[in-house]
Every structure is written in C-alpha cells, then in structure tokens.
Image (tube, rainbow, N blue to C red; front, side, top):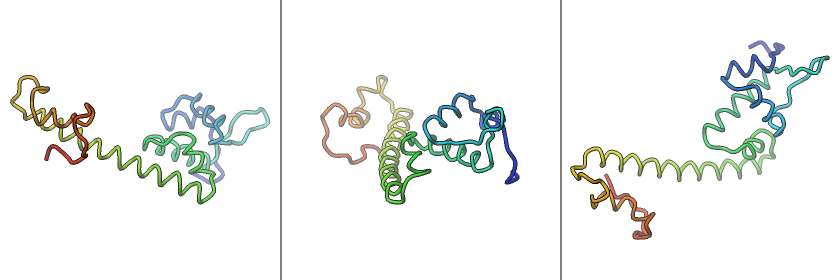
Length: 140
C-alpha cells in the first residue's frame, strides 16, 4: 500500500471480508477515525487499514472492543494491564482446549458404548459436576 493512498469503506470492507456496517460500528466505538472527503464519505488511509487488521486479529484472539480500544489508544500502564489479563485468559482457554482435545481423543479410542459410563471420560467432567477439586489432567 502506498502511504498516501486512500480507500473507500467498501474497498476496505471487501479487502477484509467484512460488512461495511462493521467498520461503521468500530468507528462509533472509537476504534477507527477515517478521514472524510468533501462529500462526507469515509476515506481510509494506510494507518486506518492497519488498525482494521489489528482489530480483526485482536478479536480473533478473543479480545473485546473495549480491550482493543485500550490496546490501540490507551496509556502504557492500561495497555499492559489489558494485555496481561488477556494473556491470563488465553492461558486458561488453552488449558481448556487441551483438556477438550484429550477428552475427544479418549472418546475416539474408548471402547465404551456410552461414553458417559467410561470412568476416565466421566473423570474429565467431574470438576463441572462438583465431584473433583483438583485441576490435574485426567487424560494423557
């Protein structure tokens, strides 16, 4: 992209596979501030397009629009707090995904006709039933 190039809202939306109303919403939420031409139409510069990419990637990583707003415009200490909390959340979700993967792998290989009767599989959900207090992996 050229640094002085400008794109319409439709061009930016198409580039990222978004509906134009999503870009308008992000603007209303304070995440984007594209220039306007003399007719009031939005004109996105390279920095705006980069911000759209950052928003998309951040949303894919599970960040809320409020968190993304701090990421893009917050003070360094606010950004650090948001990113630290997000890393903690990612670690928690990754552990949940690992448990889910292990349970799925076990279910795939388990000989029990009804997976809920398998003691190992049942142990994997015991914490949700209040039957287990530790968080050690059951499978693997």
